[in-house]
Amino acid sequence: MAQKRNYREKVLNFYRKNKRMPSITEVMTICDFSSRSSAFYMVNKLVKEGVIEKDKTGKLLPTRKLYELPLLGHIRAGFAAPAEDEIADLISVGEYLIPHPNRSYLLRVAGDSMVDAGIQEGDMVIFERTKDAKPGDIVVALTEDGYTLKFLRKHGMQFYLEAANDRYPDIRPVEGEIIGVVAATFRKY
Image 1 (cartoon, rainbow, N blue to C red):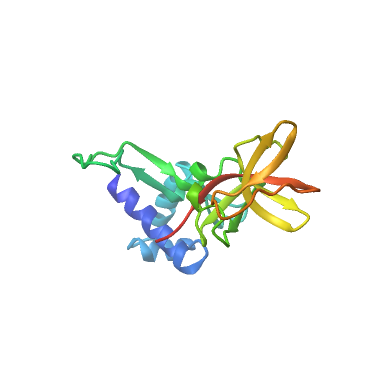
Image 2 (image 1 turned 90 degrees about the vertical axis):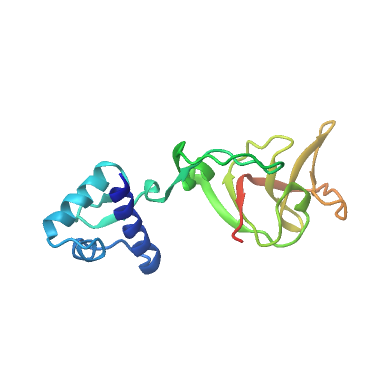
């Protein structure tokens, strides 16, 4: 299993560096195989496991499984506790963050109106295009003033948009629409 993970990591590193999947000859080189048949065998094992796939011409394509990371367990953010060393599961970050990829999009956050919801300037939000937003959801909305990211709220029969920062007033648009609902947010440190 460790050797298989090592091959998968080598293929993923090649993909990250070159922004494309390697050819069989390149797989042979990056995995230190002495023959193309060994590279074919390893590639076919990764295809069988769903880590990569081939198109109709035999070109290698990445799948979400290529990005699986080991979930080691839980860690306390309060008082310290002994760490767990065993792998609990493998999780594809893409599948975890993007439940409906065919209707999901990324936006980079500009501004600080959602900081109290944990969304900071520069963060990436993944939102799903949908009209099925409910009060309490963080939504991408189009108002007469443009696009915004806010909580959808309801008072009586009227919907409005609320920032997660007391410095910003509620938005009660005269016209507008909900473009989508935020499914996830992430940032790099």
